[in-house]
Amino acid sequence: MAQSPYKGEYQTFIGLEIHIHLLTESKVFCGCRNVFGSEPNTNVCPVCMGYPGVLPSLNEEAVRKAYQVAMALNCHLNEKAVFERKNYFYPDMPKNYQISQFEYPFGINGWFDLELAGGSTRRIRIHDVHLEEDAGKMIHEGGISKLDYNRAGTPLLEIVTEPDLVTGEEAEAFVQQFRQMVRYLGVTDGNMEEGSLRCDANVSINESGKGLGTKTECKNLNSSRFIKKALEYEIKRQTKVLNSGEKIIQETRLWDEGKSRTSPMRTKESSNDYRYFPEPDLPPYRPEKKYLSEIESSLAELPRERRIRIMEEYGLNEQQALFITAEKSMADFFEKTVYLKNKADTESDSNKIDTAFAGTVASWLSGNVQKILNDSGLSIENSPLSSDRLLSVLNLIENGKISAGIGKKVIGVVFEKDTEPEDIVKDLGMDQMSDTGELQGVVSAIVDANPKIADAIRDGADKQIGFLMGQVMKATSGKANPGMTRNLIREKIFKQGYISEDKKNA
Ligand code: ADP
Ligand code: ZN
Ligand code: MG
Image (cartoon, rainbow, N blue to C red; front, top):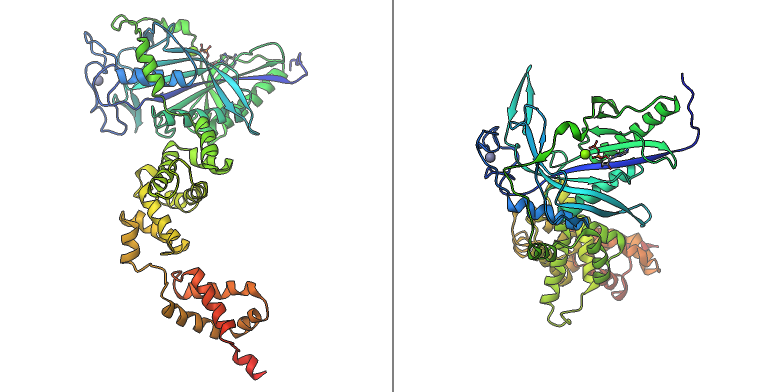
C-alpha cells in the first residue's frame, strides 16, 4: 500500500446543484399542462415530444419565477440571457438535446446567508441560477422499460452554489433553508419525495490550503437527511483513499439508502462533452428594467426578515417565531388572526398590536392546532380552520362561554364538520355551565363525596381545591366555568360553616 504523503487534517469543499420544479400552468416551451401525476403521455405535444420542424416559445411565467429566485439569491441579472442546447442522448429526452442555459443564465454571482447553529450566518456564494426543461420519465416494469413524456419540457430552475459548504450537516441545512425560501416565494412546492426539489451534492477534500480537490458528485438524494448522510459517507471514503496514497477518481456516485453508502455510477462527463451551443429557435432574452423592478418590488418577504419582524411586532419569543414562520401559510394565518382581533376591538387603538393576544394565538397554533394538523395530514391553508374561526373560538373562551379544554374540542369538530365554532357550541351543548343553581348542585355533591379533602381545605390546604375542581370538571365534561366553580367550592366549605360527617363524629 502506498504511503500517504499527508498527515494533517483535510479541508472539505461541498457545492450543491439544486433543481426546483416551477409551479406554472404550462410547460416552459409549449402550452402543455404542467401537472404531476396525470395518466402517462397525456400532457404532450409535438414541441415537447421533439418532432422536427416545430418551434419552442418561452413561458413568461417561468421567466418571472426564475427572476424571483435569482433576486432572492442576490444575483447579478444578465442583461442578455441566452438559451443553449445541451446535447446528449437518453430515451427520456426525445429531442436529443435539452434546452438550458450555459454562458448567460438569468442570474450569476449571488449569495445566500446560511444560518448556522448558534445564530450566526455564513455567506454561501451562488454560482448561477438558470432555467431549463426537464426530461421525461422511464418506468422499468417486468423486464421492459416504458416512457412517460408528461414531465418532458416542464420548467426546472437550477441553482448552483460555489463549493463553500464544509460539512454534510451544513449542506442539509442549506437545502432546508433554501427550500423554505423558495416555498415562501411561491415558485415551487419543494416536495422532495415527488421530485419537485432535487439536489446533487459535489464534494472534494484536500490538504488544507491547497484549494479544491478532485470531486465526486452524489445523486439519488431524495430527502435532505440523505444529503447529510451521503456527504458524510463520501468525506470518510475520500479521506481513506487519500490516506492510502491513492487518488480520487472524478465520478458520479449513487447514494444507496438501504446500504447507507455511495457507489460509482459513471465517470462524469465534462461540459465539453455536451457541445453546448446557442438555441437557434429562441432569441436571447433581454429583460426591461421596468419589468425587473416590478418583480423586485412585489417579491415576498423572506423567512428570516419575517421572523425578525414578527418577533418585534408581536412580541413573540424566538421559539414561537420559528414555529410561526416555518411555513408562509402559517405566518399568514397568524398575522391575519391578530389583525382581525385588532380590527374588531373598537376600544383598542387600532395600530397597537395586542401582544398578549398574539402570544395566545401563537401558542394555540403551535399546540392544539398543529397537533390536529399532524393527525389529519392537512396543512393550515387547506384545512377547515380559518383565522375567523380560530378567533371565534378564542373569543368564546375569553367571554367565558367555554373553557380552554372545550375550545380545543371545538377546533376538533371544526376540522371534522367544517362548520362555525358558535354553531358547534350551540348544537352540541358545549356552553360552559354558568348557571349557578345547576353548578351548585354538582359542587355540593363533589364536596360531600370528598370529606377528608374538604376538611383539609378548611384547615388551610388551599391547593387541594384543585383536586375538587378536577372532579367537578370531570362530572361536567369540562363545561363548568372554572372561576365560578372555585367560588362555589369555597362558599360551600367556608361560608356555610360546612363540617364533614367525619369531623362531626370525631
Ligand atoms: P461540472 O462541470 O462537473 O458540472 P461545475 O464546475 O459546474 O462542475 O460545478 C458543479 C458543482 O460542483 C458546483 O456546485 C460546484 O460548487 C461544485 N464543485 C466544483 N468543483 C468542486 C470541487 N473541486 N470540490 C467540491 N465541489 C466542487
Ligand atoms: Zn408540449
Ligand atoms: Mg456544471
